[in-house]
Image (spheres, rainbow, N blue to C red):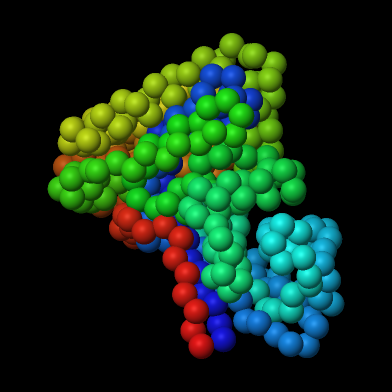
Length: 341
């Protein structure tokens, strides 16, 4: 028996950063994101030899352990161990024996929510294997708890919900841990236009999002004017982005992305650097009318809105930076699991 699970990565179109504590608790956050045809996958193969084998193909890491009720998240494959520990402590109450393999379609530190999506995919595999009574909200919330509380990894709340639910979603965050996922019914024509004109460009450099998010959080905690004011603007843009998509005013998206990017840079000095600024300026000169970095910033993917027939020229002019454009399509499905016997 083999259990397969996959969850889609996401593009954060608007509102990113407002799902980070303490801003989301103090002011309420709002994020608009969509999932794309790049995935994190998890595979569980049950064993009967009293061992736990953990393997990450994309990180090229492998570990073989004796089956136990707790695996110390000692820096090697902590996400895999963190999920297992909660499955045992909250549900099965006994050690399990299995091989767990993870695969991600993009490099680490991409800004597409990879860490959270891996956690969701692994959780989905365990839910499928053990027939656990967890719905979508339960899985997304548990994934968030594992990352933010159990493993103490800095980050926001949007990625776990995007990966679990899939599709275009407007997600609201309020005081405490309250999250509401609002699926958006966007016309196919508008989706296709956005998909055609939105360029997803990998800069060739990863980054540690946790350091950037900690710096953002400090600005929120200290009530620094720039960080809080910028986040308020970014939150308002998420509402404007929702209206723009629903109404089909797709060419306005570049302008909204640009406003978001200019404000995002005010939230932390770590978000951009001279190379990223050069990439951004080059894309705009080539015909893009706006864009923003995906995720926390500092590297990874940048998305650009390229109106009319400018996308190929933007790709050509960005070639000198050594990155690459990724092909993708929007996907409506979130977490998906199956068992092969």
